Length: 444
Image (cartoon, rainbow, N blue to C red; front, side, top):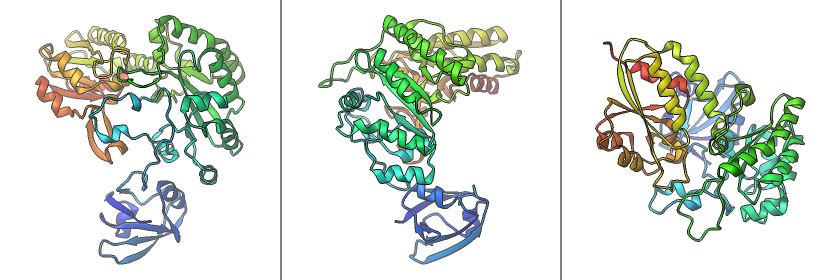
């Protein structure tokens, strides 16, 4: 298999060897490079022989002594050097099945590829894998791997994933655990199906595989308004979210006594829905589950408080923050703290409702440019509009494009033109918010 090279980093090993854009990587140490996993594994040596096919068809064999962790410093046409494996499941809660028509093609592609789990943190169900794929994970020490578990009950998992091969999950997890592969587990919790006692039983099964199963993230099902023809499902409300939190407390306390960590954590959305205080900072450890929305609010508060000392207390500036419903109160709190530290700063916060997917979707990461523009048109009275980086997509989904676009294909420049304002994109940490505000302040 040949892998086309699309960029070569300056001063990299690849440039030193004479590799150029348009060349093809064929093999390393006489072993064909099938995908990114082969590449990373084969490069993990102090001496390599690289077979390169030039654009004119000439074949070069390049030799190099290198540091073990050093790679060629090149990018390939595909981030995984292969086609991503599509999902063979038909999950009852699948978000992609709830998308409206007319969106870009890549949004409708369901990946279930262990290589993307390793490289980008994507979650996989393991139903799409053959035994040789499991062998490869173990042989190459691909770790950590992120697994969508949902339930360890074989029959229930078959029903939830609508896949007759979904029931062998626990055996595969045990095999990975025996090989000391690190596993991060995720559970999408659906009221009346895998919550309550079923959720606790699944967590206890996964705990038996600790420390290979490092942690469990439990997130609530997301329901859009585009579910025509799909199974009717309930969503969590204040009372049911509170019950889920209370149900897991005893297990979490038990695990904290045994391993010093709660092992299973519920996403912030549960606490927001239940209108309950979030756990303390030490509950979240190293915040390894941020991508699941676990500990984001707590970390945000911490960074806002820690970064206030770096906020200019004299310069002035005016900013508007657009927020999803879930984070609105937190950003409103942050704006008051920032304005108290520097009264010369104007900082307005607007709550954006999700009309595109439906108002049951409340997270900022699923907002669209259309909703932001329609709900802010004529309202902004500041110099800058601040948007969270998780509203934008880039990388693999966009074929390695560096450009950031929203779910409805809106680009930053589109929003700037429609609202006649400069957009600032910030990470979801309070630290970056303070830093970007500082950067755009002006002297009085």
